[in-house]
Length: 120
Image 1 (tube, rainbow, N blue to C red):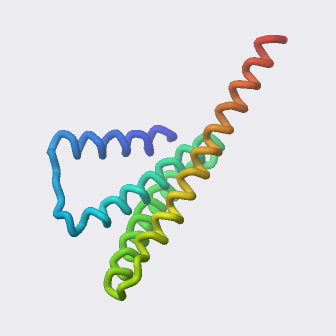
Image 2: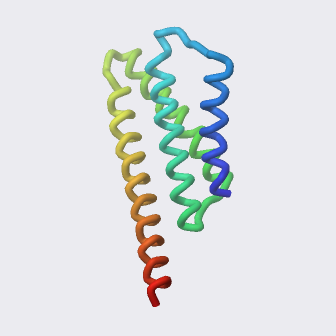
């Protein structure tokens, strides 16, 4: 099931590129934050798949919940005059980099173990 997050990413890029979809500038920061939340879920899903812990329901609910929470925080920040968008970007960005580093470490460990098996 590791293919589901990757398929979602490809579908999203294809949808935007093929339809030449544009949004008003007022909503650009919300879309950027939603995209970051989506990337967080994507890399979290890939990581869970590599660890053998991937569950579709957890992935989909996490994707929806993260995206809605991030957009709600950004909107609420706009309403009260505080830049909560930045807080959400920092939190989600940190999670993206953490997941990427764990995915990279997993692949490097697998490659090292494969080389050891080939040598013996």
